[in-house]
Image (cartoon, rainbow, N blue to C red; front, side, top):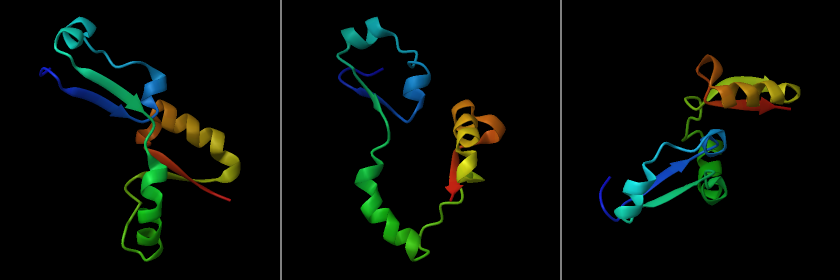
Length: 92
């Protein structure tokens, strides 16, 4: 860990358990530790048109295509990383 650096993580893993960081080392080197959910609202205005015009392929991210009624199963698969899941696409 370099002095005055920043350690960041993005995503729901924040709620599944804190990353293993040597706090005493981070403190003595003035390291900033940050985490939170992805800032999707900031990116949506740029990404939606790309999706609509077929210029962006989201398929590598969506590993499950589920009915809206199966949302709990999709969230469970993502939370446990079951079956290599990344994101579930919910279709009404």
